[in-house]
Image (cartoon, rainbow, N blue to C red; front, side, top):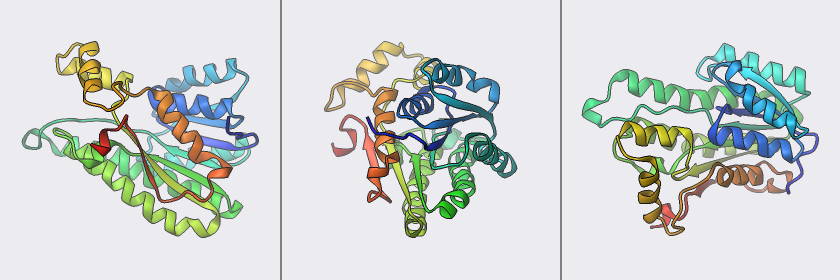
Length: 254
C-alpha cells in the first residue's frame, strides 16, 4: 500500500460514501485526516471508524461554499493535525431535473457546492502547500461531465471542475503541487440509492440495469474511487498532474 506516513489530508464531503472511504483509505496508509462535512456531527461515524483502526482523524463542520467557514476549517487542520499535504474536494449534492423544470435554486445550489467549493478549498489549501513546496489536490468530478440527461447543473459543474483542475495544475506545478481529477462512473452509494428510490425504481434492479451497460458488468464501489485517490495522493505520483482519471467500469470508452 502507498505510504502516507506523516502526511495530513483534508477530505470534504467525508461523512459517508466515497468521501468517507477515501478518508479511511488515507488513514490506513498512515495519514492524519481532516474529515469535513456540512456539520461536524455528521462526521462522527467516519472519525470513529478511523480511530477504531488506530488512525488519527479530526471531524470538521463547514459549508464549502462559504469562504470564511472554509478558511477556519483549513486553519483547524493545520493547527490540530500539524499541516496540510493532501486535499480531496469531494463534497457534492444533486438537484436533478430536466432543463425546462430546473429552477434557479437547483442550478445555484449544485454549482455553488461543486465549483465554488472546489475553488474555495483549493485556494485556502494552496497557501500552505506553496509555502511547503509540496501538495496533492484531488478533485472529484464525474462521468456526468460528458453529459447526462436530467443533470445540466451537475454536468456543467463537474465539467467545470475538470477545467479548474487543468488550470490550477499549470499554476501550482512549479511549487511542487499536483492537481488531478477523478471521474467516477455509477458508484453504489447512499446518494445513488436515494436517486433510484426517488425515481420509483427498485435499487437492486437499478444497479443491475446500469451494470449491464458497462464493459466490466458491475457498478462501482467507494473503494474503487478511494484506491484511485490514494494513487494520486502518493509522493511517487509527483509527475502526474492536470489529469482526469475516469474510474467508471469502461463507460467513458464506449
